[in-house]
Length: 504
Ligand SMILES: Cc1cc2nc3c(=O)[nH]c(=O)nc-3n(C[C@H](O)[C@H](O)[C@H](O)COP(=O)(O)OP(=O)(O)OC[C@H]3O[C@@H](n4cnc5c(N)ncnc54)[C@H](O)[C@@H]3O)c2cc1C
Image (tube, rainbow, N blue to C red; front, side, top):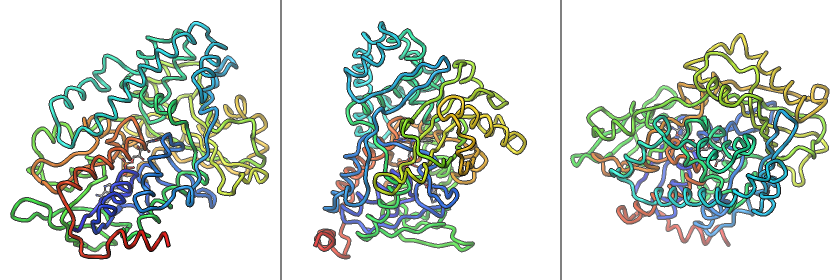
């Protein structure tokens, strides 16, 4: 059976691998010139660096993809445990680390707020409950139910229980609340309005740790694509899917993509679309959406803009943790400026991530690379980058020098900024930000279109708050549905034979 997967975001990639493992003949069409989607990599002074996710929290999910083909993930890509997971640095000079054991975490909180330390376990229990709900939701199926819609109504804008409120139920010290409210901001949503569901991410990191990838996310993407290619998945880049044609039963029978000014037709029996709903709304005709789908799958909501600064330093910074959040003095005011403001903040809050070198043990003698993620107002609100871009970059470098890396100015090999205008070009998002629109309004992670029984939607950020972990869980749940309903009779080489050969 011929399956076409649209997009090479993490969920599309995982879906393509699952379908191949089920025995389908799989073609992947990607609009961009490189794989990754939200995990896109940029070339910065000859280095390949990720312009979004920097850490993973459930390594076994990746191991599972390699195991589908009887291969071992550690043979191809190395994950490095982080401890602390994150350091939160506050303007008063204090810090709070998120660390790898419950007892140490309590001690760490007690260092700055003894009262809050006694409530940490109760907070963690709440996070775990939220995580279980998220997991159950991912596996709940791929039709929208009333429950999904009701759950959706309790999401962001109308949420009675935001992440910030949730942390306020357990902690009194602002710094502790800020530390446990960071997750939503790291994905582009203000904790003041983001759903409390984001707290589930803390349960995942507590159970499974936080890991970075040797060589950064691009190295991982490369290996996932290579895994697919070793086992017969075909990847086509610069192929923007523009329309479908249907057979008499209303199923998609062919896909049309635009490639270098040409229109390419690909016959198919099954389609998984990993692009966001907004993109798909250009591909499907109006009458191909039910009213429910139109309301819940096509609507969008803005997220914050994404600004990245990539730095290379002359010397290594062993004293700097893998991830450090630099918190500004302001919080509520700053967050509202980031979401609704029409000016750039003078006191940004941001995350500094070490990019693990490809060389084993790190090429730290030759300096290190860091990527700095700064949430900024979306392009719809602020578009003055042409004039203010340089000044903003100076603000970040100055803040870094004053907080985390004294002497940075003399140690910089290069610094290169990517502002929301470029993110719009790269990711196609109109807002120049995290393409979270779908995740904020779509009630389910993967979906089977009502009127087109062989068209499934996944990815596009729809998997929501669990990020990459959510993508992979969703892809495997979707593969279960497809495995049952679309048994393959692909006449090509049997997967077992290919796997056996690659092991030999
Ligand atoms: C700032 C930021 C930081 C993050 N950090 C983390 C983190 O540390 N850990 C974590 O777990 N998660 C993190 N995430 C979340 C993670 O990046 C996403 O969950 C994941 O990348 C989403 O993948 P996806 O498969 O859903 O879709 P996407 O990445 O959105 O991919 C969709 C793909 O489909 C392609 N496409 C769309 N339409 C078409 C078409 N018509 N034809 C052909 N191709 C098409 C696009 O080009 C794209 O490649 C972060 C996200 C952001 C924004």
